[in-house]
Image 1 (spheres, rainbow, N blue to C red):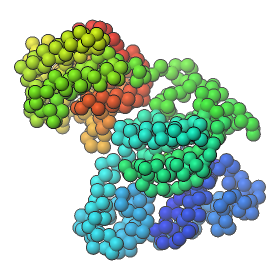
Image 2: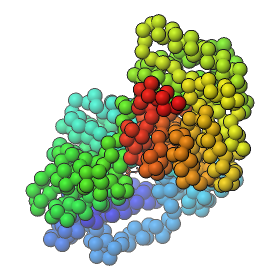
Image 3: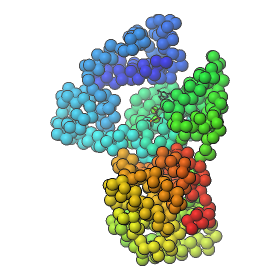
Image 4: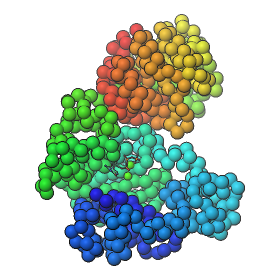
Length: 580
Ligand code: DGT
Ligand code: CA
Ligand code: CA
């Protein structure tokens, strides 16, 4: 099917025409591109059966575009497109990603300064060549600097945790529209990938026009790329794009399956359909011309002879085979989580304040609201002076405070307990910065690397191994140290770490902070394969962060983790038993 390829080219032609200052035509190309993206019939077949005339019968396709399609089908290229690219040899999609730059500005930047791509643009802002240009000015230059910085940080992708609150808001406003009968997020968001290119939302609407209007006029929307009856696409003020697709009720399941991806997973499912003499597309599963499934995702998988595959597993990484053989894991869920053991109670504003008790009570209340059975307070310890780390004396004092609050809760008849731990530092030689006789008094001890992160592989491995061998250390926090798009993992022998964790029973953390997600799905799967226990913690530095738990659960699910692999699904008694 050449429809998608043609759609992509037409979108690009539209961008080039717009940069070139041609009016009206970009709109026409975009309209056809959108139509093709969702067109049921194969244009190649239409052309084979009815020639140029038949192409022109496709809505929105005039003579010029029809000839373009014909040319592409015959030669694999469109001369008009090649000419445009030669005339404006620019990396258009790259430049359009920069906040504060549109087609008009791209043209000026190219004509006046010869800027062709992000590298050129970066050089030009550094040399302050942008502000003096007519129609630009200091403010635009500053916006471009920020836009570039943002792109560099995100490499064009956004952290799942940064976008999720907005996604939920949009879904909620759409849900309130009476004409919307079904709705789901799809794409990488539904698969819980740690970073997101754009957001995909799918709806069944009884009034597509109304839904489209409502969507493109949402207050979060900054720019409308496209508004149609089957697809709308917008850029939000926060800087990322959302695609809304409106599909038929009887195709909702197959559309959801298709647009959830991943692409690789879809290729594999389509192959299975073919071996069964069926055709799988976003419109349904077809036997000849007859639709035999597509209303629900479950049906789609069942007709293919597969058990239902959770979105987080759909990466063509063994899930198809497992679904064929009935060996899919029963993944851990957010509702299985009974508590959070990595919570800091000393946020910036509270440093040196006497409000320790109040802050811990507030965290506990938040945890009670989340229907947890326990929460663990684990502040930094003394080696981290800038984080106001607690020394032995401070820890013992905190122990008393927590005991008092627990007594209060008991008196009030609230079935909830605050556990007391700490997040101690693994020093360069693998020793812990708090004396063992104090560590012993705590309910549990987390240890993590917070300094000298650039050690060589052997040193770093030995360092963490030694910490795990300390009988007082129960959990290793953010085990690989990576920060998404900012910092690589420590150099270490992770297989060795896993072996020792197995020997010592040390629990590895799945840190749910959006820029950490450490362990990530890949490493969680490795750990699970070795039978190592893990814990999903938020590493919250303010009580609102307790809601990060869902991202940790998402990674755990991407790592095929089941309830039994995750120790904070245990009751408090069993959890404390485990630490003993
Ligand atoms: P992202 O947006 O880069 O984080 O990743 P996705 O997976 O959300 O990708 P996106 O938004 O380009 O497309 C959404 C889903 O639609 C994708 O996961 C699978 C499906 N899809 C898109 N393009 C193709 C394609 O060319 N072939 C197939 N088989 N599926 C596609
Ligand atoms: Ca996407
Ligand atoms: Ca998309």
